[in-house]
Image (tube, rainbow, N blue to C red; front, top):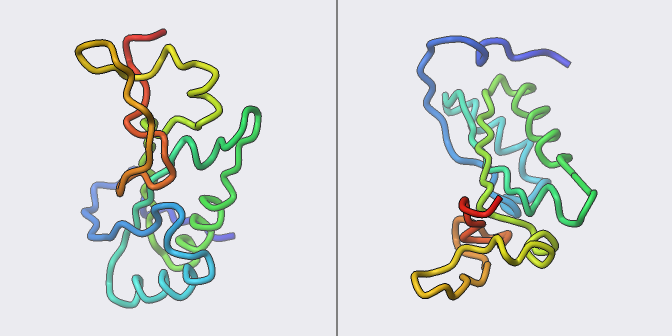
Length: 131
């Protein structure tokens, strides 16, 4: 596998696009899409890595989507920016640690849910005030 070294430790400015926000786009579209992104002159794709997506149950971590995306980005000479989204706690974790949920001013906890930016659920995340 070739290594895309132009992305590491450089001061080059990149123009790119948001690409993968689980569960979209479908995996079968990635190879074609990334080739088109390169053809149109973009140099970078960005994805969001949701905690709830890669850790769907206790003890299970699955980064296979991101491994495949990195493989295809490298194949197409694209840099890949992976942005961690910790405010998408998995449902199993929230059930186990309900004391860590964010609460409003009167102490009522916010019920984690899916929103447009966090379609995998778990939003608004956890309270930073709970150890």
